[in-house]
Image (cartoon, rainbow, N blue to C red; front, top):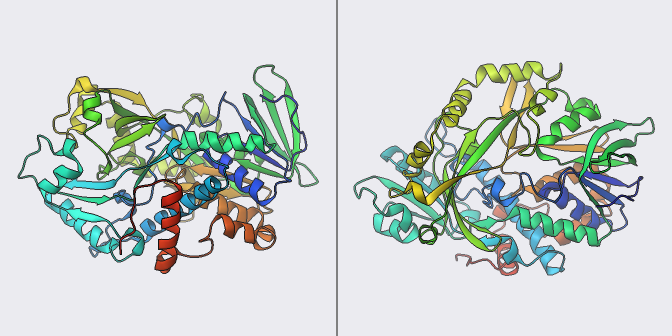
Amino acid sequence: MNNNFDATPDVVLIGAGIMSATLGTFLKELDPTLKIQLFERLETASEESSDAWNNAGTGHSALCELNYTPEKSDGTIDTSKAINIIEQFEVSKQFWSYLIDHNKLCAPGDFIHSTPHMSFVWGEDNVDYLKRRYEAMQKYQLFKGMEFSTNHDQLKQWIPLMMEGRNPSQPIAATHMKLGTDVNFGALTRSLIDELQKRDVGVNFKFEVEDIKRREDGKWKVSVRNQETGIKHILITKFVFIGAGGGSLYLLQKSGIPEGKGFGGFPVGGQWLVCDNENVINQHQAKVYGKASVGAPPMSVPHLDTRIIDGKRALLFGPYAGFSTKFLKKGSYLDLFKTIKLNNILPMMKVGLTNFSLVKYLIQQLKLSFSQRVEALEDFVPNAKEEDWRVEVAGQRVQVIKKDAVKGGILQFGTEVVTSADGSISALLGASPGASTSVSIMLKLLNKCFPDKMEGDWNAKIKEIIPSYGKKLDADNQLCNEIRNWTTRTLDLNWKQPS
């Protein structure tokens, strides 16, 4: 912990998660002379949403997540969001590969592993949907290599644990993509922050940011308190990034920027079923996503995940949704109430009145017994035994509520970057697929906050870090193949580009 930090840095980063770590790394690559201070209220980096046990670890690339490919009213499949998501994950892999090539990141095996991504459905209507989804995605180079099957024998090879004890006459289907990954975003974040410390970035743990105010000269006055000594410190800076996860909304409101008015937050918690039987764990090697229940938020899509956490293989199922007024796993039950303001109470009330299905779903989830949770698991693992599983609390997410001219207020899933008109302060709100797309999100932030630099002095360096910058991989098959060959080799992934 640093008690002698620079009180007039060029940049202040709030929160030691994947977003601040990514932005800090970009800034140091683009301008090594920048003076940066990072503040985190907890004792170590990535203890909240970035921690391996607080997220699914899915390298979100739309290979298995069915909510990214909705069915239109005419029966066709909308692939636009899926293409956008996979493009963004390819950008993330380029960023990590560049850092590894330049010895600025840990070994790839410490944070990323090849893990097939699969979608799995049952019932004739769902089988038909998955087949149409597969056919729609095969039109694009980014999804080449995906396989589809309704054959029980083939599925036994892909997912033996899920097929054992299953009714042989049950209509089922799955897609399988070897390109998928499992990512430990906690390990990745800690490696990025360790490297930032080596590059003279001040990383200050157990410091609470209490206030952010704009000065008359346009700079920002940031008040932080050392939680061990109780001493308050004042920093003056030209740029502030609020990447504090569930704590971002409260600090954004403190800043007083007009762009932050009208935003609210809806907290959704989660729990996993974690397997303790190594014999069961070793029978499954994939991330398998199903379809969400009616009224369920996207983050609650059921999935059975192979994980590699701290070098050890694990198996998780869930998440089961829950509700708490906390905005952070290690937060306060007052978090929600502290963010209710005159400028956002109407959108929040409108969302409450128009999302009865979500409220009903959360209540149902909260009432589930352990046995009922295992019953839900049996749709994926027919022979699941209660004694092989236990409950583990997952991370807390805050979904964005924002003003809407027509509806008054809407509940928005995903991420939202809120930036002041002059680009001197920016905050990240929202949730999944945030970590997987953190690099693209931070590139957009850099373009908003430093447009002249990004078009000028920094442009060549950005293209060195992200070779596909400014281009669409799906519009250029040769570039797509070259990029994937590079990132696959550098990240030590198990993938061969199909011809």
